[in-house]
Image 1: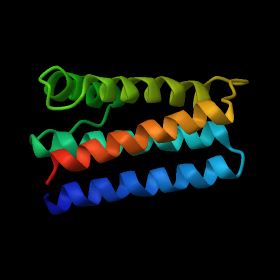
Image 2 (image 1 turned 90 degrees about the vertical axis):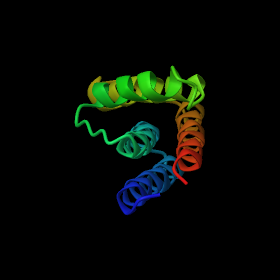
Image 3 (image 1 turned 180 degrees about the horizontal axis):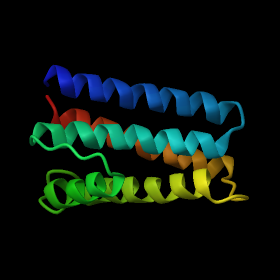
Length: 124
């Protein structure tokens, strides 16, 4: 793993840790948003391995789908977690009145942890 990839994964770990704190304090929407960012950073680390960098979330998600899920390098289920996380984050952050349950937010955190673990395995 390169130092850049390690730094990006450290951001993913920090975001997931923050998500856990937020969830435990009753901030489900914010926790789900942080969980998405944890996956987003891990996705950026994966793409960095291929010499790619994107600033737009949709570009990162599409590139992970094309280069990792579609090719079998990453379980397509994990790409779906990334997509769902993005949609959940958008609703939580930008749609007034949307509110996640503890269970829904907790699922996002579990998905993020699994995504980060898979990314770490691909970045030895």
